[in-house]
Length: 137
Image (cartoon, rainbow, N blue to C red; front, side, top):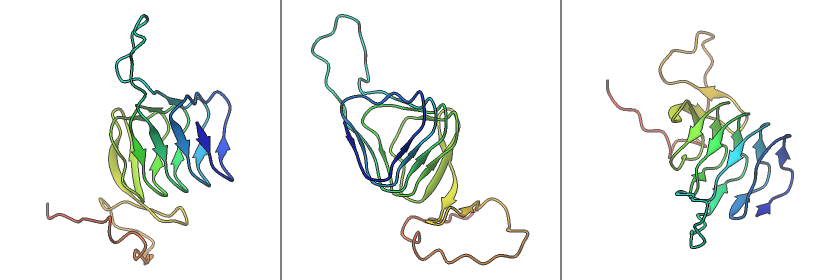
């Protein structure tokens, strides 16, 4: 287990061997990290799958993160989510299983590409432009 600087880890979090939290990560209450994809009571030959939460990412309370996952920089996972695959940087995911729902800026502005910004705000998305892929619907 490795925990970076300025991390926030709330109560009830389960962190096991093979978990790495980079700097400025926020882990909400009762988040569970797992490190064995196929747990069995008597299995002594299991292989630890490392999990990495990259700089500035946030995981909401009550979420479960399966082993071998990488959560990208500044990604945000909503409360109660089950993370079953790698999460790209600057993306917003939630649900069971977690699904991508939008994009997150470094300053925590959430961009939901499924609706117009009613306030008419313009956001500089240069920091996330390599992750943004807009498809015609």
